[in-house]
Amino acid sequence: MNKKPLAGLAALLPLAACSDKAQQPNIVFFLVDDFGWVDSSVQYGEELYPNNLRFNTPNMQRLSERSTVFGNAYACAVSTPTRTSIMTGMNAAHTGITNWTSAVRDTPSDATGGGFWMAEHSGSGDALAGDVLSRPDWNMNGISPVPGVPYTQYANSLVQFLKDAGYFTIHVGKAHWASAGTPGVNPYNHGFCVNIAGTMAGMPRDYSGMQNYGNTKERWNDFAVQNLVEYYGTETHLTEALTQEALKALDYPVKHKQPFYLYLASYATHTPIQPDERFAQKYRDAGMDEGQAAYASLVEGVDCSLGQVLDYLEEKGIADNTIVIFMTDNGGNSENKQKGGVLHTQNLPLREGKGSCYEGGIRVPLMIYVPGKTKVGRCDIPVICEDMFPTILDMAGVRGYETVQELDGQSILPLVTGRGEGPDPERPLVFHYPHKWKPYDLEDIDFLSAVRIGDWKLVYRISEGARSANDRLYPDSRNTARAAAVELYNLKEDIGETRNVAADYPETAARLADTLSARLRRWNAPMPVVVATGKTAPLPDEL
Image (cartoon, helix red, strand yellow):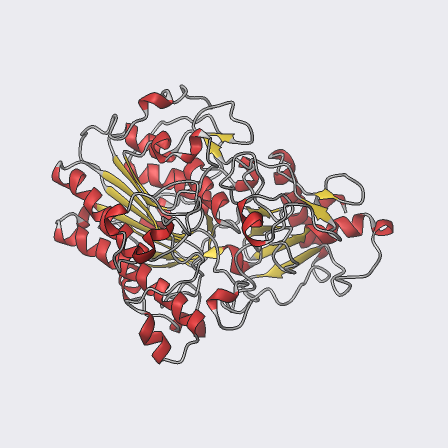
């Protein structure tokens, strides 16, 4: 479908068109970074797991007790694809934004393509010797509110529709939708009336106010957090500073009785894993190593932030007309040594973590509270991040909208209220990460795709698919224990994806492989290139 193009960028200025209209429900979208499925005391699974008991999260628990808690909610393997899917209603494989955007325009961010991460951590952007695959062509510049920008997905923004419907729209924290030098990098261009600290940065340079959040002569880079000058030289942790700025921004719409959309996207719990000293000592005293204690303190800082927002809504007398959504952008980071503990175990019972299409990388916390209408308890119907676009517009009462992009998400509001028809529990959910995340081998993280249908999930190891389709080109010298290019799991029976049953259920594996291939083919999804042949890697139904 088509809609009139968005207004010219010159007209998209702060507070422009943020006019009063009839009262509608306020909406708070609380999005956390790199926060795992078991990183709180909230029970998203059929039981509480040992990892649920590590951290103090009373406010997440408080919200869960009045919310629909989604036990099978999904995001993408890394942050930008999730964030752009929320903004556009499209699957990441469909937008072509399959990795996190670099701070530098027209610069790939994966380990085989260079970009800021490589410059910081390895000193080289060259392809890595011995790799089976090299990066695909993809929309490395993210989303764009205007057409014609290279390497972007042109789309109408969720936030612009809310603004046009009379919402006062506030962005606080991490944006990370697009690269610097493109119109999509600026939250104002997507319909936000206020922007606090939202730039191209995907992580903070520093969490400490004493370090000016990275804005010092010695430490500045593109990831230094902006718009927080009044906290420079103070002990104020970044999470606390962002929360205070969010509450200040809310005062305007509350005073003027205007419906608001607050998108509070904490930089925590992304690296660098630096302690929030308001909370860290209790975890040290409990015997955690320094990395574990620092991460735990970041988690509790996020929980405190949520509590402050909930308290504000109650103090202002607007809690009964404010919807609250709590979600994270991908699974918890399982390979970073800064977090302490044992690598690749932080998301147990889920397998792996951020960057992976196994459950630990894509299954995420999600809870939604709609005052007076919430069906409280756990909902196990699978949902995915692109569902947030139609869901939020449904919540706001925005009807009859048309978009330049084809929407993939469906409203899950009926699952929250128990009224109406929600998504089919058997609809296919697609995940696609055709990249090498880090410049070293991560066996269960890089170059993966997956599809879930009901309880069944198929994982396609693209690099192994490339090998099996071109056996004569690859000496059997590494990864010899992994012969199958596709793996099949029954998540109801095996949430940890420990038993590949593809050989036991070949028809089911073939059905899911066909579904995944058809979706990726129809969306013209980016696929990596087989280094030995220069051709794109095969889809699973081509093996």
